[in-house]
Length: 74
Image (cartoon, rainbow, N blue to C red):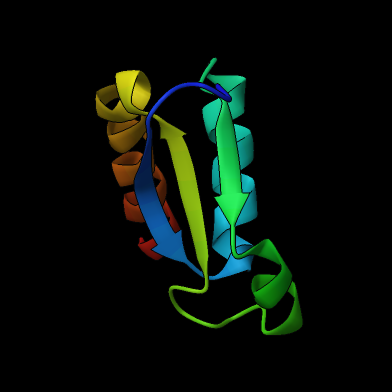
């Protein structure tokens, strides 16, 4: 993924971004966290952490993100 274009699929608190990253990777989508250090200092800071994936995986990742958000707020 180092040489691919990256897209943000989620912005939120680290307490949500970290499990989401695991879900994406469990579904075969390599994901990175941006802003992870700030997110660990302020774990509930909204928008502090971004989950990014290769642009080629964006559509599939967004569907997983939508399911994750829907299930975490239900």
